[in-house]
Image (cartoon, rainbow, N blue to C red):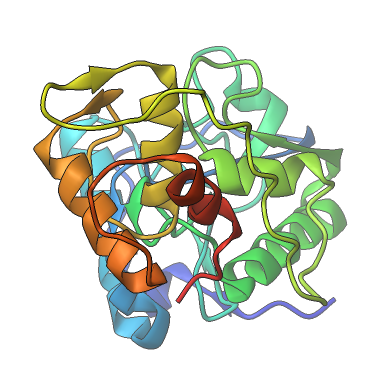
Length: 254
């Protein structure tokens, strides 16, 4: 099989802080995202991917006190796969009691910034899965981190792809289905709160807008709404009505 594997020595990985627990086989692979902001600039700068992987390892070693980076592999936008703990070694990222079941593959996308996985990331994930199956005795399962563990990881967009069977992106990705308009205007002031606000905020974050996904439509959400409305050529009143709601899902990403 073909895989563009970045070995530990090639990304200057630090030595582990102890011995790994060995794995003979797994049921498959679980897919993760960073859970924080990922700079969209890494799409055109592979050095940024290397720096990010190093920073994640440093956080896991020095912050979490783990023996090494918690992931088996890391998939980057350039269709490259970083060797983390690698094959036949217990990962740490799946959650207590769940690590022995699956290898852990991190996609370099986050909850803000770069939130939609580029095709190169998806190809790299599939390459890592096939590599783990061929040489690491991984089973057929491909799951998200949230399967069996209470977390938002790997994010809605990446999880939707996993649920579709993690296909290679050989064709255009269909636009996400637009949820029904909630029946009320989202506006500020005063602050509008609710799950409909959170749904809209999450979609805008997936589109690359910087805002907190907290279910509270305040000044930050209003300003993002105005910027989005101007980009779409509609009245920039900062109010999420039926038209702005629909465009959040239906308008092409730029």
